[in-house]
Image (cartoon, rainbow, N blue to C red; front, side, top):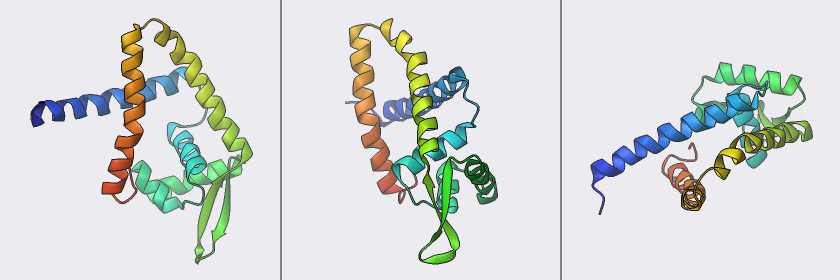
Length: 151
């Protein structure tokens, strides 16, 4: 049985490694959008209709900063903004077909960067990564449930 200290160390190491890996892949793809903009597009692809405030909370940035990012995405034709039916002052956001293509292209470019490295791994290491890839969404959902949908 693992001690709480060992599990805490694993948690810190996993969060750090995941963050560094995601940023390294982002940089390797050479995409022109910001990391936050790509994350926003991917989030809106999964959860259409979110509002600026919720996106800002999820990304850990101020609402004015998120508003600027959304304005650029709308101006670039990657996000649509529609009045919220329950609050005329608020807007619901959805990703456009062009925005979905940007997300798909980024994912394809990411795979092109990472697949060659996977080929150099042992079958056991690939299986370990497959297990981690299956577990991480479950852990993410548990965190979301604990934090009211903000993970």
